Image (cartoon, rainbow, N blue to C red):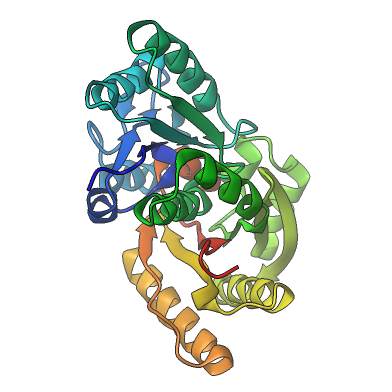
Amino acid sequence: MKKNFCVISDGSCDLLDDIVKKREIDIVHFLVSFDGCQYKKEGIEINLDEFYQRMVDDPKTYPMTAAPSPQDFYTLFERRAKEGSDILCICISTKLSSSMQSAQIAKEMLKKAYPDIRVEILNSLSCTLMQGAYVLEVCRLRDNGYTLDETIKVMQKLIQSGRILFTVGNLDYLYHGGRIGKVTSVAGTFLNVKPLITLEDGEIHSSGIRRGRRNSLNGVIELLISYLKEHCCTPDDCTILIGYCHDTEEAEKFRAMTMECLKKIFGTVSPLPLCRIGATIGVHAGPYSIGYGLIRRSDRI
């Protein structure tokens, strides 16, 4: 059965390839560079294994990303327009990237050739795992027969419930990106301090600090539990994604820790997907970032 609209997202959503294929999501890829000159499409011309390994092997090299161009968006918009499909495009927060501006330019370009095709672009006020959860909720609504207008209305309400909760391996990348001062960075390195960080409404907020990696991982789990209790919901009332960058073994252990804690408090809990945090956020948070992205489920409110 033909759906009311198609779903397109920029690559900041960091969803697994099999999820993207199953949920019929089109991805417009970001670009990444290690020298500031040659840019490669993330996931197409450079994979995340290679990207993070280079960061680990040369920790004093700070890669950069670039937003997709209007032409990158237009290529996908035109493909769907030729099929006669209206389009809902979800972009990373405008506070973090110019990706949405590129999408809006592509929308204007499409109007000239396909005036009957409707294109709506949503600012997810998020990135990485939260954006991924946001996109999956859009797909849930689309697949349940919601119209484009109905979907936008629901998502505008849900967006306030979205969070990213995470910690990092060290403070170097946050300092390099201008998120913290040099004194804080140096002190954090000597004291082995790990920040707990929340992204809400498109902005980064401090949620405390912990000494050592194990304590910081437990701290992120506590942030998740606090969120669920504060909002009077269970894990199954939300779309929750676990994300990591480089260390797959640690990520699996973190997922096991998470599931154990959630089951103790909430009983039976559905397994949480494990996703890879992409280069778009990895360049700012470093190769050892780990945490959650979540949003309330549209069918549980």
